[in-house]
Image (cartoon, rainbow, N blue to C red; front, side):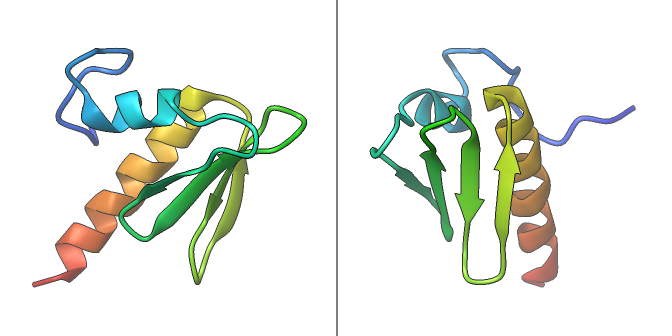
Amino acid sequence: MEQICLFQQDSSSDPLFDLLQQVEYERPVIIADYKISKNRYGLFEIESREVHECRSSIKGCYEYLCGELVKEYKTRD
């Protein structure tokens, strides 16, 4: 069983998904240490000091961020 975020995707109760829906071309959103933007081809770019990833859908971006945020949380202890 694999569930990496507490909220259901595409849900209005999920603050992460809500923030990703606000991303537009040349209007990035900052989530934790990540800058999320959409390039002119409609791809989601995920950037931090160590990362520059690209995802083709909001779902892919959401899943990537959930995974990274969970990893960061686990390494804090």
